[in-house]
Amino acid sequence: MSPKTLTALVAASVIAIAAAPASAEDSVQFSYKSYELDTAGGANVLHKRLTKKAQLACEAPGARTLDDMRVEENCTDRLADEFVAKIDHPRLDRIHDAENGSVRIAKRR
Image (cartoon, rainbow, N blue to C red; front, side, top):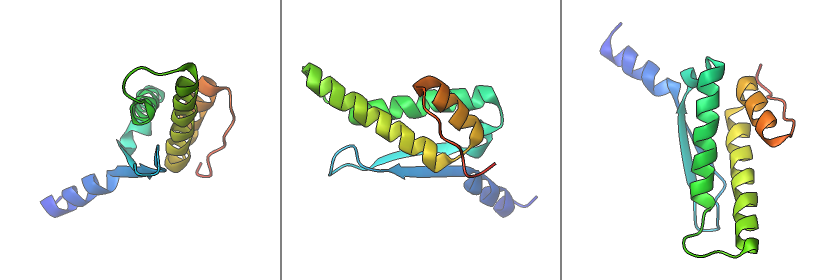
């Protein structure tokens, strides 16, 4: 396999997701490699990573009220939902649904 072909395959296997902003000025980027979804363990690690990314994007610095924390939690949930929806993989959907008690069916099978 030529170096160009290998580079093209590697580039094709890396998928970046730009999610809706956590606030009006923000854009949140999340990247993953398609092979991470090949196993349940890999999908589980990916789910933890995307959830953490969503938390960090939604978390406000400093002291926060209970209302602030609820807003952050809702933001985290929405952003994680969006990441999962854009990845659109049944294995990740099952993990996300189990974590959140929701049901989403991937379009791709």
